[in-house]
Image (cartoon, rainbow, N blue to C red):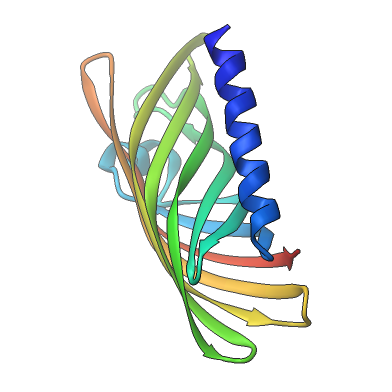
Length: 185
């Protein structure tokens, strides 16, 4: 019951924010992530490419709230002696506050900070391990208008969270670069 009430109240608040402001946007981007954790690099390689969907809503002048969802799927091998196949699926949910600086009519710079939640599902040795972790995300980037409603977004940043699976510390996230296409309403 509490969950349903929370969802309804959140929907009403978000709806009021959107209707009270003249701008909200949706961006679809591709992210190139360089893993920060040694244990990730040993199993899955140095990087991952994944999509992200992001919504942002202006709340006051140049400030906006944003929320994003990304999905990553990676395959690797366990330690060389075993050579067993490993699969990792990550759901990456993030949200926070952002600030835009208008540089010219068709160009602005953005700065974002917020929280990130990793939901991990790893399959190896006919076993499945589920884990999750909360961390932070910081982003700097630029939006270039293609038209009044469409824009491209180029950004870079850092996402980080620490997890512990079977007494082993795992460092999630890392540096990323992103290229996206957005629609402004």
